[in-house]
Each structure stands twice: as C-alpha cells, then as structure tokens.
Image (cartoon, rainbow, N blue to C red; front, top):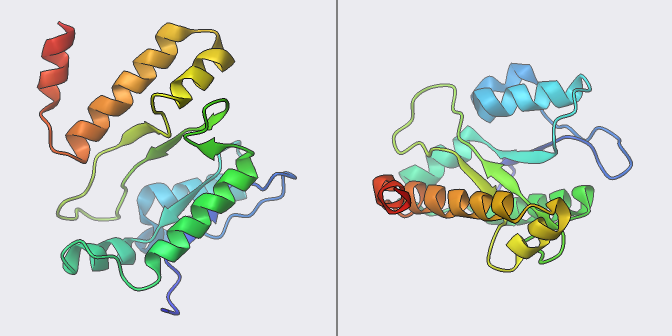
Length: 168
C-alpha cells in the first residue's frame, strides 16, 4: 500500500463539522477545481460534499495504461462510502439517490482529460426516487437522459450528436 494520499475530502460531515482536507494552495495536488472547492468549503460556503482524486493519481493511472496505482481504488471506495454517510444518501438508491458530478480540473492541460459527467447515481430505479422527491417527472427523466448522454459521450466515446439528432 502506498503512503501517498490520493483522495482528499471536502465539505461537512452529517453533524455540520468541516472535514475538508485541502485548501487553495494545493492547486498542483487537487487541480484548480478541487483546490477551489476545498477552499470554499473551508471558509464556510455551502458547497455540497465530495472528494477529489489527486492529479498525481490521474497522471499515474494514465501513464500505466489506465491501471490504478496501488491503493488508489481502496481510497476511492472509502471516500465514496464516507460521502454517502456524510450525505445520508447512497449512489443508485431507489428512494433517495445520491447524485454527484464528476469533473476534471488539472492545473495544466493533460492528455485525455475528461469532460464533466453530471447526475452520476441515476439509473432506472433511482430516477423513480428523484421523481418522488421532486414531484416533477419531466425534470427527473431529463436529468437521467442528460446523464446517459454525457456518460455515453465522455466515457464510452459515443458521438453526442446521435442523441441530439434523436431528440430533434
């Protein structure tokens, strides 16, 4: 197991105590977005909780042919479980889903840098929970459609125009 810290939390715990582990000075560790989210959380702005995977981890992953460095997945899974506990929600839960955004934000241009994927956590079951919570089926189904479109394009390489053309 590596001694290198690969995941940094930001936001508050279930009791409202700040658990943020980074700050604005950590731009080269957390990337621009990660460092700024940490700083906003640290100064008390109402930023939804989350975690940041370090830039170094991403560089190592990419450099090893998309193989995670030793211990990285364990830290990511632990951060996911911690986030679920802090939010009181679970990813993919059919009645009260935790939805997260996945964003990249390195301090410099990196090959293969990923675009944003919103609404990670929506699926055929959890969209029903979002409908129940919002009483707005159109909003929930549109959110799910956007997630499928973004995931298909960003992660699977499917041309986004195929979705737009189908809607038109």
